[in-house]
Image (spheres, helix red, strand yellow):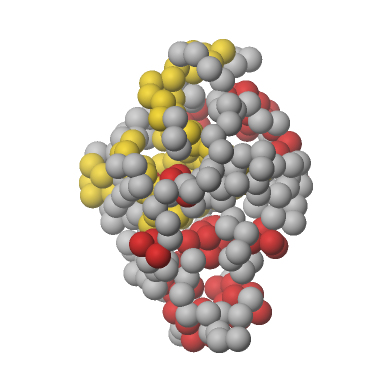
Length: 295
Ligand code: PD2
Ligand code: ZN
């Protein structure tokens, strides 16, 4: 079988997430080669994600536009205009039904946003400082983003947020991945991708060994972005403008294990200022992360 020379969106995410976790670029390249990627392509792909210059994903035009056959079930997101969580009321501002997307106001308080940024700022992974081609340490000023994780229930502050988020998403805390904080500078973007793991793509089965498929996402905005940095859903022409403490929620896996391709989404380039977000991904089953595995 020919070696793979195109980067599916989920592999782009995989590289990005592991770089953010502080993995060595060479280890990612080795993993990709083990998964049938061409070695030179794998090196270029990791380098591309680090510098945000590609190579990028396979053309999305090749995939069917419609979520053919996806059965829309009762949304997990609670009905009504207000979600009363154990410690805070969250207001629903906008709902889209197909795909299931909602914009939510006041998921986090201003103080909680500031605290998350403060806690993250000194543990962001500057993994782009190593050039995988030369092996030299280089600071790349305009990297796409940098990130850090907070294990589920890592401390009382994070546990309070994990609980509230689980109530908003109506899905168990134990099924959640650890909160991931991302920071984008000017020029930083997140190319359109799916948050679920396509079952036919290499590597997805590894990602799904623990916890199964991802079912829903909550992207929370931690600051106001001066310009750009919107979350875009290109299949339906929706653009969500970041607002401190607000969030966009979407779900894409139903009880038949079908996946909703209409949830293709990305982060448009930040053109002025900076952007901070925190994301929660929920899995079908209990996800094995504990506070002890926090980075
Ligand atoms: O930064 C965003 O707006 C964004 C866009 C797409 C975040 C994510 N996906 C994500 O965290 O999955
Ligand atoms: Zn995403």
